[in-house]
Amino acid sequence: MTMTHELGLHLNGLEQLQIMLDQDLRCPIAKTLDIKMVEAEDGRAVFEATPDKHLYNPNYFIHGGFSATMMDFACGYASMSKIPAGKSVSTIDLKVSYHRPINKDTGLLRAEGIVTSSGKRVIFSEAKLTDQDGRLYVSATSSVLVFNLE
Image (cartoon, rainbow, N blue to C red; front, side, top):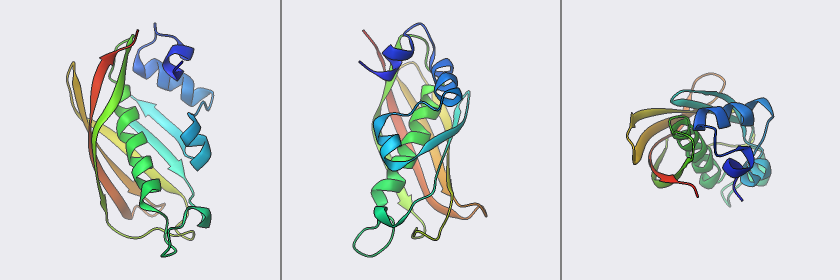
């Protein structure tokens, strides 16, 4: 059973996101990586996380997969905000560009995703990962498939 099923198939994507935000409901990977949704509105979603050294790669920087996951959340949830009841989304593609390395001293990171184009079958979005001073660390574009839930 999906979170969408648990929240209720009668809810549209934005209504689901509002409940998840209000109740701090997170899927397992968000709990594992301590990534939290902090804003959700029509066509926009924002996540925050503070990475630490347990996320380091062999070069002692935060592994790129962590940033990519934040980008996937931001793009995916922004897209989810556009879907009607009884639908869900699944990532078709995610293009991630790394602008500067992240380490444990980078501090709080904010991933903001916005929908750039929304259709009945495919939704396109983009996201940026910035620090508290607005410095850009990662950018991404994504497309998601909209499909029926049974």
